Length: 379
Image (cartoon, rainbow, N blue to C red; front, side, top):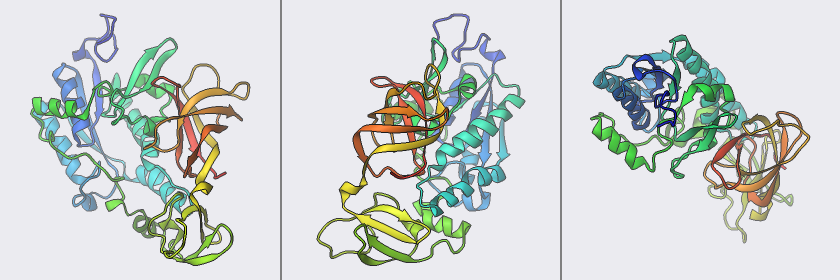
Protein backbone atom coordinates (compact mmCIF):
# COMPACT_ATOMS: atom_id res chain seq x y z
CA UNK A 1 0.00 0.00 0.00
CA UNK A 2 1.26 3.55 -0.70
CA UNK A 3 2.44 5.72 2.14
CA UNK A 4 0.17 8.59 1.13
CA UNK A 5 -3.30 7.83 2.56
CA UNK A 6 -4.85 10.05 -0.13
CA UNK A 7 -3.79 7.53 -2.80
CA UNK A 8 -5.41 4.20 -3.53
CA UNK A 9 -3.49 0.91 -3.85
CA UNK A 10 -2.64 1.78 -7.47
CA UNK A 11 -1.13 5.11 -6.44
CA UNK A 12 -3.98 7.24 -7.82
CA UNK A 13 -5.86 9.99 -5.91
CA UNK A 14 -9.30 8.42 -6.31
CA UNK A 15 -11.51 5.94 -4.57
CA UNK A 16 -11.19 2.48 -6.17
CA UNK A 17 -14.81 2.59 -7.39
CA UNK A 18 -14.00 5.77 -9.31
CA UNK A 19 -10.78 4.33 -10.80
CA UNK A 20 -11.09 2.49 -14.10
CA UNK A 21 -8.41 -0.12 -14.71
CA UNK A 22 -7.99 -1.98 -17.99
CA UNK A 23 -6.43 -5.38 -17.26
CA UNK A 24 -4.58 -7.09 -20.11
CA UNK A 25 -5.86 -10.67 -19.73
CA UNK A 26 -4.00 -13.47 -21.52
CA UNK A 27 -6.21 -16.18 -20.05
CA UNK A 28 -3.43 -17.42 -17.77
CA UNK A 29 -3.36 -17.48 -13.99
CA UNK A 30 -1.20 -14.35 -13.57
CA UNK A 31 -3.35 -11.79 -15.36
CA UNK A 32 -6.51 -13.49 -14.07
CA UNK A 33 -5.36 -12.99 -10.48
CA UNK A 34 -4.60 -9.33 -11.18
CA UNK A 35 -8.10 -8.79 -12.58
CA UNK A 36 -9.77 -10.67 -9.72
CA UNK A 37 -7.74 -8.88 -7.05
CA UNK A 38 -8.50 -5.43 -8.40
CA UNK A 39 -12.16 -6.31 -8.86
CA UNK A 40 -12.36 -7.51 -5.24
CA UNK A 41 -10.75 -4.26 -4.07
CA UNK A 42 -13.61 -2.40 -5.73
CA UNK A 43 -11.93 -1.00 -8.84
CA UNK A 44 -13.84 -0.44 -12.08
CA UNK A 45 -12.15 -3.30 -13.93
CA UNK A 46 -12.37 -3.83 -17.69
CA UNK A 47 -10.74 -7.01 -19.00
CA UNK A 48 -9.23 -7.01 -22.49
CA UNK A 49 -7.82 -10.02 -24.33
CA UNK A 50 -5.97 -9.78 -27.63
CA UNK A 51 -6.51 -12.22 -30.47
CA UNK A 52 -3.05 -12.15 -31.99
CA UNK A 53 -3.07 -14.90 -34.59
CA UNK A 54 -5.37 -17.37 -36.34
CA UNK A 55 -8.09 -18.33 -33.90
CA UNK A 56 -8.91 -21.63 -35.59
CA UNK A 57 -5.31 -22.83 -35.44
CA UNK A 58 -5.02 -21.55 -31.90
CA UNK A 59 -7.84 -23.71 -30.57
CA UNK A 60 -5.67 -26.79 -30.80
CA UNK A 61 -2.57 -25.07 -29.41
CA UNK A 62 -1.58 -25.67 -25.79
CA UNK A 63 1.16 -23.98 -23.81
CA UNK A 64 0.96 -20.55 -25.45
CA UNK A 65 -0.72 -17.29 -24.54
CA UNK A 66 -3.49 -15.57 -26.49
CA UNK A 67 -4.77 -18.81 -28.08
CA UNK A 68 -8.44 -19.69 -28.51
CA UNK A 69 -8.62 -21.63 -25.26
CA UNK A 70 -7.03 -18.71 -23.42
CA UNK A 71 -9.62 -16.26 -24.75
CA UNK A 72 -12.32 -18.57 -23.41
CA UNK A 73 -10.58 -18.80 -20.01
CA UNK A 74 -10.23 -15.03 -19.73
CA UNK A 75 -13.92 -14.59 -20.51
CA UNK A 76 -14.85 -17.15 -17.82
CA UNK A 77 -12.81 -15.30 -15.19
CA UNK A 78 -14.54 -12.02 -16.07
CA UNK A 79 -17.94 -13.68 -15.81
CA UNK A 80 -17.04 -15.21 -12.42
CA UNK A 81 -15.88 -11.86 -11.01
CA UNK A 82 -18.59 -9.79 -12.68
CA UNK A 83 -16.67 -7.27 -14.78
CA UNK A 84 -16.86 -6.58 -18.54
CA UNK A 85 -14.50 -8.36 -20.91
CA UNK A 86 -13.61 -7.59 -24.52
CA UNK A 87 -11.67 -9.47 -27.19
CA UNK A 88 -9.79 -7.28 -29.66
CA UNK A 89 -8.64 -8.56 -33.04
CA UNK A 90 -5.01 -7.46 -33.31
CA UNK A 91 -4.03 -10.16 -35.77
CA UNK A 92 -2.90 -7.81 -38.56
CA UNK A 93 -0.98 -5.54 -36.18
CA UNK A 94 0.70 -8.52 -34.55
CA UNK A 95 1.75 -10.00 -37.90
CA UNK A 96 3.17 -6.70 -39.14
CA UNK A 97 4.82 -5.60 -35.89
CA UNK A 98 6.11 -8.92 -34.56
CA UNK A 99 5.86 -12.02 -36.78
CA UNK A 100 7.24 -10.52 -40.00
CA UNK A 101 10.26 -9.05 -38.21
CA UNK A 102 10.83 -12.35 -36.41
CA UNK A 103 10.99 -14.22 -39.71
CA UNK A 104 13.21 -11.64 -41.40
CA UNK A 105 15.59 -11.54 -38.41
CA UNK A 106 16.04 -15.31 -38.48
CA UNK A 107 16.63 -15.17 -42.22
CA UNK A 108 19.33 -12.58 -41.52
CA UNK A 109 21.14 -14.88 -39.09
CA UNK A 110 19.91 -13.18 -35.91
CA UNK A 111 18.23 -14.74 -32.88
CA UNK A 112 15.20 -12.51 -32.25
CA UNK A 113 13.09 -12.16 -29.09
CA UNK A 114 9.53 -11.59 -30.36
CA UNK A 115 8.01 -11.36 -26.85
CA UNK A 116 9.86 -8.06 -26.31
CA UNK A 117 8.58 -6.65 -29.61
CA UNK A 118 5.05 -7.76 -28.69
CA UNK A 119 5.21 -5.88 -25.38
CA UNK A 120 6.80 -2.86 -27.05
CA UNK A 121 4.71 -2.56 -30.20
CA UNK A 122 1.39 -4.21 -29.38
CA UNK A 123 0.60 -4.54 -25.67
CA UNK A 124 2.26 -1.36 -24.38
CA UNK A 125 1.51 0.70 -27.47
CA UNK A 126 -1.70 -0.27 -29.28
CA UNK A 127 -3.42 -1.86 -26.28
CA UNK A 128 -2.34 0.97 -24.00
CA UNK A 129 -3.84 3.49 -26.43
CA UNK A 130 -7.06 1.45 -26.44
CA UNK A 131 -7.08 1.60 -22.63
CA UNK A 132 -6.86 5.38 -22.79
CA UNK A 133 -9.72 5.40 -25.32
CA UNK A 134 -11.77 3.47 -22.74
CA UNK A 135 -11.14 6.34 -20.26
CA UNK A 136 -8.99 4.11 -18.07
CA UNK A 137 -6.89 5.69 -15.34
CA UNK A 138 -4.24 3.00 -15.76
CA UNK A 139 -3.56 -0.41 -17.32
CA UNK A 140 -2.53 -3.43 -15.25
CA UNK A 141 -0.80 -6.60 -16.42
CA UNK A 142 0.27 -9.91 -14.89
CA UNK A 143 3.97 -9.37 -15.53
CA UNK A 144 6.43 -10.09 -12.73
CA UNK A 145 8.17 -6.75 -12.46
CA UNK A 146 7.88 -3.83 -10.05
CA UNK A 147 6.97 -0.20 -10.62
CA UNK A 148 8.25 2.01 -7.82
CA UNK A 149 8.20 5.76 -7.33
CA UNK A 150 11.62 7.39 -7.20
CA UNK A 151 12.85 10.96 -6.82
CA UNK A 152 12.35 11.63 -10.56
CA UNK A 153 9.12 9.66 -11.04
CA UNK A 154 8.14 6.06 -11.75
CA UNK A 155 10.99 3.55 -11.95
CA UNK A 156 11.15 -0.03 -13.21
CA UNK A 157 12.56 -2.64 -10.82
CA UNK A 158 13.15 -6.38 -10.99
CA UNK A 159 10.49 -8.60 -9.43
CA UNK A 160 10.83 -9.73 -5.83
CA UNK A 161 10.94 -13.34 -7.07
CA UNK A 162 14.13 -13.56 -9.11
CA UNK A 163 12.99 -16.85 -10.66
CA UNK A 164 9.91 -15.14 -12.16
CA UNK A 165 11.43 -11.76 -13.02
CA UNK A 166 10.43 -10.58 -16.51
CA UNK A 167 12.44 -7.37 -16.67
CA UNK A 168 14.50 -8.66 -19.62
CA UNK A 169 11.33 -8.70 -21.72
CA UNK A 170 10.15 -5.25 -20.61
CA UNK A 171 13.29 -3.11 -20.95
CA UNK A 172 11.78 -1.07 -23.80
CA UNK A 173 8.93 0.24 -21.62
CA UNK A 174 9.12 4.04 -21.89
CA UNK A 175 8.78 6.56 -19.07
CA UNK A 176 5.44 7.71 -20.47
CA UNK A 177 4.14 4.15 -20.57
CA UNK A 178 5.43 3.49 -17.07
CA UNK A 179 3.32 6.38 -15.76
CA UNK A 180 0.20 4.56 -16.97
CA UNK A 181 1.14 0.92 -16.24
CA UNK A 182 0.75 -1.10 -13.05
CA UNK A 183 2.23 -4.52 -12.17
CA UNK A 184 0.45 -5.85 -9.05
CA UNK A 185 2.30 -9.20 -8.98
CA UNK A 186 5.83 -7.82 -8.96
CA UNK A 187 6.13 -7.83 -5.19
CA UNK A 188 4.99 -11.43 -4.62
CA UNK A 189 7.61 -13.79 -3.24
CA UNK A 190 6.75 -16.76 -5.46
CA UNK A 191 4.41 -18.14 -8.12
CA UNK A 192 2.89 -20.31 -5.37
CA UNK A 193 1.44 -17.11 -3.87
CA UNK A 194 -0.21 -16.29 -7.19
CA UNK A 195 -1.79 -19.73 -7.43
CA UNK A 196 -2.95 -19.51 -3.81
CA UNK A 197 -4.69 -16.21 -4.62
CA UNK A 198 -6.30 -17.78 -7.70
CA UNK A 199 -7.64 -20.60 -5.53
CA UNK A 200 -8.93 -18.13 -2.94
CA UNK A 201 -10.82 -16.20 -5.62
CA UNK A 202 -12.18 -19.50 -6.99
CA UNK A 203 -10.76 -18.87 -10.45
CA UNK A 204 -11.17 -21.65 -13.02
CA UNK A 205 -7.53 -21.15 -14.13
CA UNK A 206 -5.98 -21.65 -10.67
CA UNK A 207 -4.16 -24.83 -11.75
CA UNK A 208 -3.61 -23.91 -15.39
CA UNK A 209 0.00 -24.61 -16.52
CA UNK A 210 2.25 -21.69 -17.42
CA UNK A 211 2.81 -20.98 -21.10
CA UNK A 212 6.21 -22.10 -22.37
CA UNK A 213 6.41 -21.44 -26.09
CA UNK A 214 6.41 -18.29 -28.15
CA UNK A 215 2.69 -18.06 -28.86
CA UNK A 216 2.90 -18.41 -32.65
CA UNK A 217 5.65 -21.08 -32.67
CA UNK A 218 4.11 -24.52 -32.03
CA UNK A 219 6.40 -26.88 -30.10
CA UNK A 220 9.30 -24.44 -30.37
CA UNK A 221 9.88 -25.30 -34.04
CA UNK A 222 11.05 -21.89 -35.29
CA UNK A 223 12.29 -23.21 -38.63
CA UNK A 224 8.90 -24.69 -39.58
CA UNK A 225 7.19 -21.35 -38.90
CA UNK A 226 9.76 -19.40 -40.91
CA UNK A 227 9.53 -21.83 -43.86
CA UNK A 228 5.77 -21.32 -43.85
CA UNK A 229 6.13 -17.53 -43.71
CA UNK A 230 9.02 -17.33 -46.15
CA UNK A 231 8.86 -20.24 -48.64
CA UNK A 232 12.31 -21.28 -49.87
CA UNK A 233 14.03 -19.91 -46.77
CA UNK A 234 15.62 -23.24 -45.86
CA UNK A 235 18.14 -23.45 -48.70
CA UNK A 236 20.93 -25.96 -47.99
CA UNK A 237 24.56 -24.98 -47.69
CA UNK A 238 27.94 -25.84 -46.17
CA UNK A 239 29.14 -26.31 -42.61
CA UNK A 240 32.65 -24.89 -42.48
CA UNK A 241 35.24 -24.81 -39.70
CA UNK A 242 36.58 -21.38 -38.78
CA UNK A 243 39.97 -22.51 -40.14
CA UNK A 244 38.41 -23.08 -43.57
CA UNK A 245 37.84 -26.85 -43.54
CA UNK A 246 34.63 -28.09 -45.14
CA UNK A 247 32.96 -30.37 -42.57
CA UNK A 248 29.59 -31.15 -44.06
CA UNK A 249 26.28 -29.86 -45.35
CA UNK A 250 23.29 -28.28 -43.62
CA UNK A 251 19.60 -28.01 -44.53
CA UNK A 252 19.21 -24.27 -44.04
CA UNK A 253 20.84 -21.53 -41.94
CA UNK A 254 17.49 -20.94 -40.21
CA UNK A 255 17.94 -24.24 -38.34
CA UNK A 256 21.00 -22.91 -36.45
CA UNK A 257 21.74 -20.34 -33.76
CA UNK A 258 24.97 -18.87 -32.38
CA UNK A 259 26.35 -21.07 -29.61
CA UNK A 260 24.55 -24.23 -30.78
CA UNK A 261 26.44 -27.47 -30.25
CA UNK A 262 23.93 -30.29 -30.64
CA UNK A 263 22.34 -31.38 -33.88
CA UNK A 264 25.11 -30.15 -36.19
CA UNK A 265 25.48 -33.51 -37.95
CA UNK A 266 29.28 -33.39 -38.02
CA UNK A 267 30.19 -36.13 -35.55
CA UNK A 268 33.47 -38.02 -35.43
CA UNK A 269 35.65 -34.98 -34.75
CA UNK A 270 38.22 -34.85 -31.95
CA UNK A 271 36.94 -31.58 -30.44
CA UNK A 272 33.45 -30.31 -29.60
CA UNK A 273 32.40 -27.60 -32.04
CA UNK A 274 29.88 -24.79 -31.73
CA UNK A 275 28.17 -22.47 -34.19
CA UNK A 276 30.24 -19.28 -34.01
CA UNK A 277 28.88 -17.40 -37.02
CA UNK A 278 26.08 -17.57 -39.60
CA UNK A 279 27.01 -16.32 -43.07
CA UNK A 280 23.55 -15.89 -44.55
CA UNK A 281 24.65 -14.56 -47.93
CA UNK A 282 26.98 -17.50 -48.56
CA UNK A 283 24.54 -19.93 -46.85
CA UNK A 284 27.36 -21.07 -44.59
CA UNK A 285 27.30 -22.21 -40.96
CA UNK A 286 30.71 -21.52 -39.43
CA UNK A 287 31.73 -23.64 -36.44
CA UNK A 288 34.67 -23.51 -34.08
CA UNK A 289 35.89 -24.25 -30.54
CA UNK A 290 34.02 -22.87 -27.54
CA UNK A 291 36.55 -20.11 -26.85
CA UNK A 292 35.58 -18.46 -30.13
CA UNK A 293 32.14 -17.72 -28.65
CA UNK A 294 33.53 -15.46 -25.94
CA UNK A 295 33.15 -11.72 -26.42
CA UNK A 296 33.57 -8.60 -24.31
CA UNK A 297 32.31 -5.97 -26.75
CA UNK A 298 28.60 -5.75 -27.46
CA UNK A 299 27.28 -3.15 -29.96
CA UNK A 300 23.78 -2.03 -28.98
CA UNK A 301 21.22 0.23 -30.69
CA UNK A 302 17.56 1.28 -30.33
CA UNK A 303 18.38 2.07 -26.71
CA UNK A 304 15.59 2.93 -24.28
CA UNK A 305 17.20 4.73 -21.33
CA UNK A 306 15.36 4.73 -17.97
CA UNK A 307 18.26 5.87 -15.81
CA UNK A 308 18.77 9.28 -14.22
CA UNK A 309 20.43 11.98 -16.27
CA UNK A 310 20.93 12.13 -20.02
CA UNK A 311 22.16 9.25 -22.17
CA UNK A 312 24.71 10.75 -24.53
CA UNK A 313 28.38 10.59 -25.36
CA UNK A 314 29.57 12.72 -22.44
CA UNK A 315 29.86 9.99 -19.81
CA UNK A 316 30.18 6.23 -19.45
CA UNK A 317 27.81 4.31 -17.19
CA UNK A 318 28.88 1.58 -14.75
CA UNK A 319 26.05 -0.97 -14.78
CA UNK A 320 25.18 -4.65 -14.82
CA UNK A 321 23.75 -6.15 -18.02
CA UNK A 322 21.95 -9.24 -19.23
CA UNK A 323 22.69 -10.42 -22.76
CA UNK A 324 20.25 -13.35 -22.54
CA UNK A 325 17.09 -13.76 -20.50
CA UNK A 326 18.34 -16.90 -18.74
CA UNK A 327 21.68 -15.47 -17.59
CA UNK A 328 22.34 -13.46 -14.43
CA UNK A 329 23.42 -9.83 -14.79
CA UNK A 330 27.15 -9.27 -15.27
CA UNK A 331 29.16 -6.10 -14.66
CA UNK A 332 29.74 -3.85 -17.65
CA UNK A 333 30.49 -0.33 -18.83
CA UNK A 334 28.17 1.41 -21.31
CA UNK A 335 29.86 3.92 -23.60
CA UNK A 336 27.15 5.92 -25.43
CA UNK A 337 27.76 6.75 -29.07
CA UNK A 338 24.48 8.68 -29.40
CA UNK A 339 21.17 8.84 -27.58
CA UNK A 340 20.18 5.47 -29.04
CA UNK A 341 23.48 3.64 -29.71
CA UNK A 342 26.28 2.46 -27.47
CA UNK A 343 29.14 0.04 -27.09
CA UNK A 344 28.85 -2.19 -24.04
CA UNK A 345 32.09 -3.55 -22.59
CA UNK A 346 31.63 -6.68 -20.47
CA UNK A 347 34.14 -6.87 -17.62
CA UNK A 348 34.09 -10.67 -17.97
CA UNK A 349 33.62 -12.23 -21.42
CA UNK A 350 30.28 -13.88 -22.24
CA UNK A 351 29.71 -16.74 -24.66
CA UNK A 352 27.10 -16.92 -27.39
CA UNK A 353 26.23 -13.22 -27.62
CA UNK A 354 24.03 -13.07 -30.70
CA UNK A 355 22.58 -10.33 -32.91
CA UNK A 356 18.84 -10.05 -32.35
CA UNK A 357 19.07 -10.59 -28.59
CA UNK A 358 18.48 -7.79 -26.10
CA UNK A 359 21.11 -6.26 -23.84
CA UNK A 360 19.31 -5.04 -20.71
CA UNK A 361 20.86 -2.58 -18.25
CA UNK A 362 20.53 -2.81 -14.45
CA UNK A 363 21.71 -0.78 -11.49
CA UNK A 364 24.81 -2.53 -10.14
CA UNK A 365 24.03 -4.10 -6.79
CA UNK A 366 20.38 -3.02 -6.96
CA UNK A 367 17.07 -3.94 -8.54
CA UNK A 368 16.42 -0.95 -10.79
CA UNK A 369 16.10 -1.51 -14.55
CA UNK A 370 17.97 1.24 -16.40
CA UNK A 371 16.72 0.31 -19.88
CA UNK A 372 18.45 -1.57 -22.64
CA UNK A 373 18.81 -2.00 -26.37
CA UNK A 374 19.22 -4.51 -29.18
CA UNK A 375 22.44 -6.32 -30.06
CA UNK A 376 22.72 -5.67 -33.77
CA UNK A 377 25.94 -7.27 -34.97
CA UNK A 378 28.50 -9.82 -33.87
CA UNK A 379 31.98 -8.77 -32.82
